[in-house]
Image 1: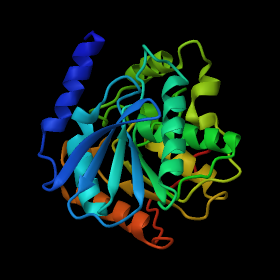
Image 2: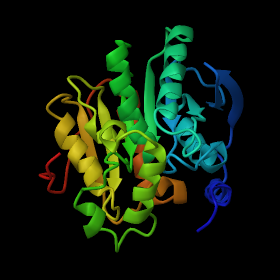
Image 3: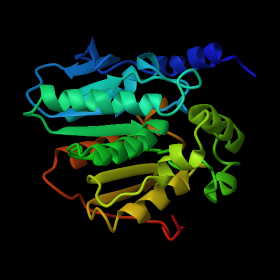
Length: 286
């Protein structure tokens, strides 16, 4: 078993697969005591902001692993994206990352009152968006304008059917790896409390959910969509055929990644709903 620092260094190499988008600069800033990075396109005019929460099973991931991918989102959206370098497990178990993210969001609300703020998260980052919105509701903070999930990890208990049915076609994640990562993230807190799956909502922002068919986490997205659709009518689920976990991180230039970039742009920059098409059975219970 690789030690944690070796795993983190290896994961950071994902950021070297393809170059950053030309013309997108990166600026570091401490916000509410949390290290963050702004990705800023050339000649940007939009006041709207997007917060990006990275994946990595709550234990790995950094600006080095994700800057290239996020720069392409920033270029496509033509808006500033804030990468939050949240506290990682196991050194900082639940709720350290969650608390830091909410503090950053509250600070942005205060310092950018003219801006609509959205969230994008991949894998564990998408789960952290769900947990953060639950905390915002508790604190009676205004919710984000819209949110986007890419290959969301939502059920830390790992009881969904796709965890077993897709494990032979998912080349990236395994049930055993996620089980151990969930335990490290939760620390001394019960998974019933730390798992985003168990956050209850009476309202939720408009949400775009992207997931691949070749993921053990496929049902995480389907189940959350089925749960949230009666609460938020502008909930859109896109299931990408033959795609694996967070496919834009591996190749931003593929047809599926370019389609994802376009759909995220369309969802976040349009005035309302985008056409809703779900091509698969979504009857799994949440």
